Image 1 (cartoon, rainbow, N blue to C red):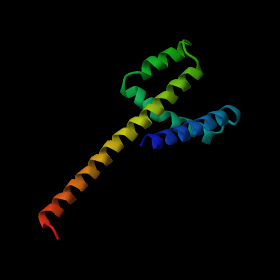
Image 2: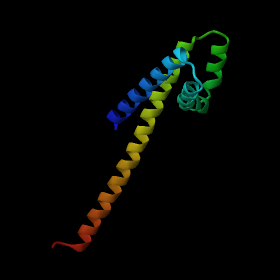
Image 3: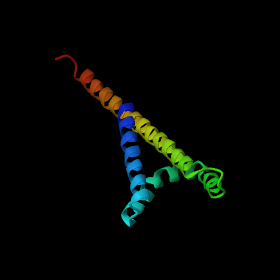
Image 4: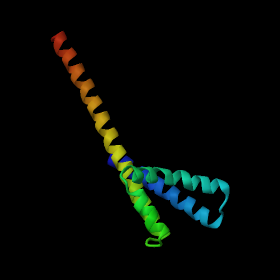
Amino acid sequence: MGSNAFLLSIIYLLTGIGVELARRFYPTRLVQQLSLSLDSLPARALELVGALEPLRSAYLDGRISDAQVRLVFGVTTIAVIFLLAFVVGLLVGGLRSYVERRALRKTRQRGPG
């Protein structure tokens, strides 16, 4: 579970770095849309916890740089990915445990043989 989340985080962040480099050097409409799509996950997560508006205000006031916003978005994305992996792991583990217990009960009801 942790290794899958780690791998997914690395892929997401490498994709984000690639899109950000492309946005800076080849700012096409497609690259801009990709950038906005990648930013939507951390932006929604930050909005959910009430941190997006203070971050936006700090950025617009010049108190934090573009790189710092990217860092916050990156850390948020990693946290969301690991949280989702944890929740999915709990659900799959719980379902597996339920199926195993049910199978064990059926085996016991049939008796030896």
